[in-house]
Length: 416
Image (cartoon, rainbow, N blue to C red; front, side, top):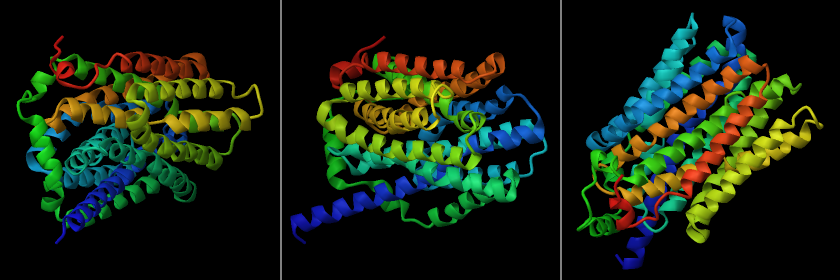
């Protein structure tokens, strides 16, 4: 076999692994992000205030914060088959159970914490670790493709969930989504995970060469660096900004007079445009630099939120279109950058656990943003205070990102 044929086979294998991880992430994140569709029907049945309802999603994000480092460690020690299998099994059973919930606290447990365990072990943590074993120079682009699964998932599952709710009610909708996860479990456990987890030999050689003479990274060592806490802060503030808006977006649009299915479609369009933004995050950061792209991204997010805040002052199509274009196109685009910077600064056998710890910031920020926007709605009777919270998170996220140390040995070993 010629060297060119061997390289071609390796590229095809890498693309196959990337496609697989993207598909699993698409299903897992897409299903998890349907909660905005369930907000109003659950509220109508249980007659609780908005903060209690958004608290379900806050429980999900808080659960992600707790479970993410454990998911990374599980992947590092036991491999992808058990990591993905456990996640899909828990996710499916939790959503099946949610369809029979008789009290809101049960939804906190099932959709919140059960969904968090499933999401952490089937999302970006295992996917990013596998991608780093198959890609080297094009790793930012690969991470962008993986992150785009969130947008694709929203685009697909938001209208599907809304249609299921409209046709069968929110309980059966949860049962259908849970059954989908269990079907995916049956397919995933049959895959050749040993070969998938081994990675590309050339990438393994490059990683081994880069690691020679470098610090042996553990979570305890990473926690003593400024890079880790900068990345943690970026994820916290960015997640706060995103989920202060997204969780109540459908309810906000419905209250503004937009039909529920149309509001769900807008939510899906935001996810669709985020696909381009997340792929662009990988491609453009390779060309113009991570900080410059992040500046453009955060600025678009802030202006998009400002456009949404004018809803009610103009014909609805104008602020909604501006919001979808500006906020949607940049939603999730910072995630791939953080994943790449984490892999670059903390390589080695404990990379998954360290990245999982970084994602604690995402879970905590999402919990604060989703609950905070609900509490502000109860306090003010409107959505603009929550939008201000989201814009503030974006400003702080940008300020932290530009302070992240440049990659390299100096940045890696710089201590607090």
